[in-house]
Image (cartoon, rainbow, N blue to C red; front, side, top):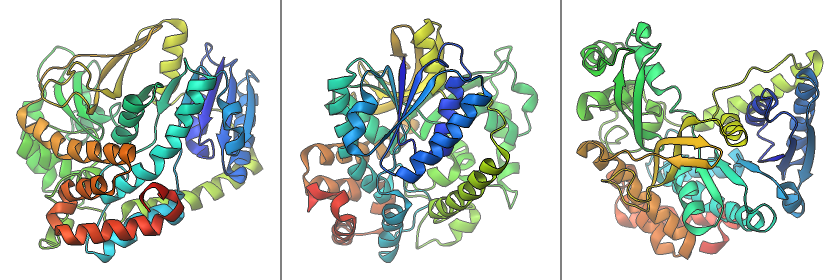
Amino acid sequence: MKITFMGAGSTVFARNVIGDCMCSEALRDSVFALYDIDGTRLEESRTILEAMRSVLGGFGKIECYLGVEKRKDALRGASFVVNAIQVGGYDPATIIDFEIPKKYGLRQTIADTLGIGGIMRALRTIPVMEDFARDMEEVCPDALLLNYTNPMAMLTGYMLRYTCVRTVGLCHSVQVCSKDLLTEVGLEDKLEGRKELIAGINHMAWLLEIRDRDGRDLYPEIKARVDKKMAEPDFKDKVRFDYIRNFGYYVTESSEHNAEYNGFYIKSRYPGLIDRYNIPLDEYPRRCIEQIDSWKKEYAELLKTGVKTHERSREYASHIMESIVTDSPYQIGGNVLNTDHLITNLPAEACVEVPCLVNGYGVHPCHVGPLPVQCAAMNMLDIGVQLLTVEAAHTHKLEHVYQAAMLDPHTGSELDIDTIKKMVDELIAAHGDYLPEFH
């Protein structure tokens, strides 16, 4: 069996996912094909993974493929393809995504899922993923693509609507959502045996139900503790707790993410909200700089001391592959098209995040029904932007890019239409060859 990792220069993530596969008896004898366009980072990943493979028993085989001309070979015959690319990287793309909007008074926190930064990231990533899809349709047509790249809903939605590649989008936040919430409010004793239902869209999927091992609803006790947590000056999850207060439910992704998915919290006319809700503006560029520096130090230390071992992580990827290969049922929170209205009050063409059963026949999304109307309305604020961005990537019409930016709740709450268009034009010009379709 062959497992191909696209964007293998993302060494820490590649180490987790492929290390997880090496810990699985059903997957460890696979050929692990590493693909990237950066030779230095590809070699770093190869070095770490070869050392890990040796520590874990020497099973399987690692192959490396560098550059676009080797892409088909990397994909040829793969059963599973993991996508973790970042088109344009931190420098220049992420810097552009933050610095140009900042000139217009538009501040962001993460900018990888929604907002003007999320729109630009989708537009420069979709053409590359479409190239992947055309190659996969030719050389591994039955492979399952596990997409980890953001903006999750836009990229996964595009692949499912406009290519023939079997695709599921995977995030890290569903697995820890209820655990984080119960821990934050001091209900750790309710963790074991808890039952939950999570559904919505990526990064804004709602914890619709949370019950203890005996089936008792935990939300009343959670809500009784919200105000006390919100009163703590250094508490970092205030946006999500504010969601509980005002919309009744907790969401999967962090407060720094959700602060920019609406027009409520980052407002130039109300600068006091930033401190009130502990919103870390320009958080993603800071993380990028820290991660780059941290990896250099970690890599040097690994070369010096060697790789010790690997414990299987919470990432879904290896469990999905293992479930399909062994025909053992497994449940995930997956990003899929809302076909047949899995969530009945969201559009059929939307990419939604719902419970999915995995077995030997693949990934099977589960019917959820309607979301609470206020939760569906919050999701729809973001879905409109996602669908317009996907439309822009498909049609190459600049007007759809303008419309996506205009309808983005944070952007539209801060800037007028003429300014939004001017900003979009400047962003497209700055991205240059990353967005050739719009020049």
